[in-house]
Image (spheres, helix red, strand yellow):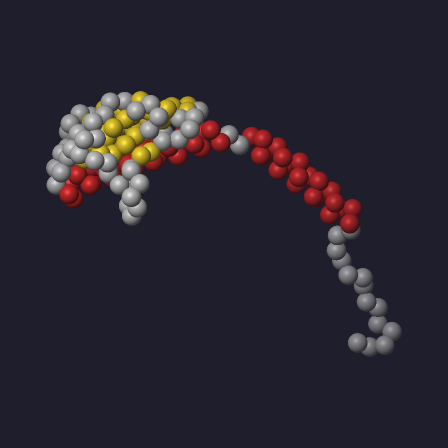
Length: 151
């Protein structure tokens, strides 16, 4: 640097400008947080879990060459071997020993129980409704066993 050369001051934000930005961001965050509806997330998540469980039951029936039942109650969905009374034992969640059940508080399930045979064909097609903050449907085709989730 040459002696006597003028150097401009460093540019930046003042404390007041930074404080105002923080206040505005805090107000926007509080407004956004109040608009989040966790009940709709729970309903959507449970419907996705139900669809995945029904698909798993069909794949399990095909891979193990045995009947797998999908038992629907208002509080949960359970997978069992043999029949809808679960007399053949409960399907276990991989890799643990817990029974394969799907359900969540604040969400009810509706629909009839059914079985998948060793070819993956359901004993009856139908719809499993998941009701919480709104209604979601999981549709099982009667001929093919194709599982569709309709949000």
